[in-house]
Every structure is written in structure tokens, then in C-alpha cells.
Length: 187
Image (cartoon, rainbow, N blue to C red; front, side, top):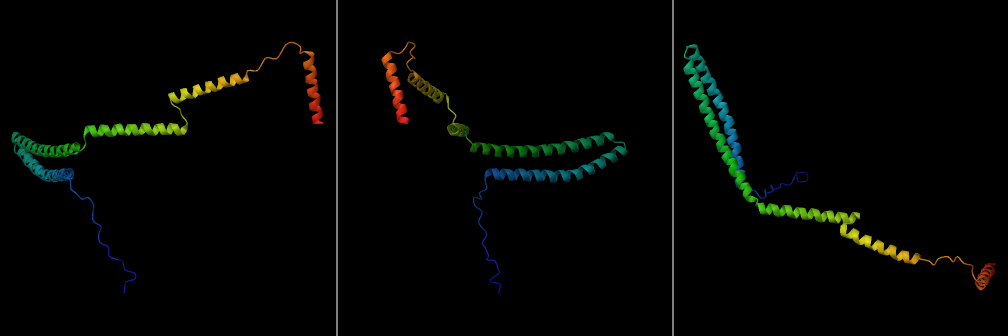
């Protein structure tokens, strides 16, 4: 029973590339240190409230200078402890950042940037070819070719000038005969 509608059990797929790097460990240390500071602040808040009550009591008793000294000492101690934790966190973060920077070599990054620039220039050249844009050398070649064609065409278009003098009689008769032949052929 249940064989038709039951799901086949699947083994969980293993997680690939689950190495924990030094950077991961540094990040975890920083986060746990942050959480510890938050917990420490909560605990110190209770302690500060207690010390303030004691300082208020000393003020009421007329020992104001002692109350100020106690409160100042408590504040200085708390601030020094927080500073120490912050410095530790900064040190851990700095170490993690140095490790990350070791992965990147400046020359390698420059090489990648140069390759990217070359690839972009190559792509622009292809785009210009496809869109029909010409660079300066191609434009000069095209203009030279156009000038050569115009010069060649100018030579072809050079026709003899129309004569301004009267045609001799013989040539007039031949022209008339040709016209008659054309008319006769057309008819």
C-alpha cells in the first residue's frame, strides 16, 4: 500500500566547495565579537544603573566628590574595555582585509584592465565596421577612389565641340539621305 502515491526518498545532495577560508573565519570572529559587545553593553548597563544608584545615595549623604569619582572611574573602565574590544575587532578585520588583498596582485589587475580595454576597442571596431563607419585611413582611400572615378568620367564626357561654321554641301546631302533612309525604314 502507498507504493503508487508515495515519494521516493532522495539522498540529500552534498554541498560542493564547502571549504572554510581564513576570511570566513575572520568574518565569523568579527560577528561574534560584535555580539559579545552587545551582550557586554547590556550587562554593563545593569552595573551602571547600580553604580548610579550608589552615586545618588552618596550625593544625598553629602559625599558628592566621592560619587563623582566613582561614576568617573566606572565610565573610564567601561570605555577602556570597549576600546580594547573595538581595537581587537579592527585588528581582526584588518588582518582579513590584508589576506583578501594578497589574493589580488596589482600587476594582474592592471593586466585584466588592459585586456578589458583592448576587448572594448576591438568590439567598437567591429561595431563601426557593421554600422558602416569608416576610420581616417579608410575615408582617405574612399576619397581617392572617388576622385579617380570622377576624373575618368570627366574624360569620357569630353565631347568635341559643336562646329560653328557651315557644313560643306556634300555632308549636307549625306545627312539628308540618311534621314530619308531612316524614314523609309520606319515606314
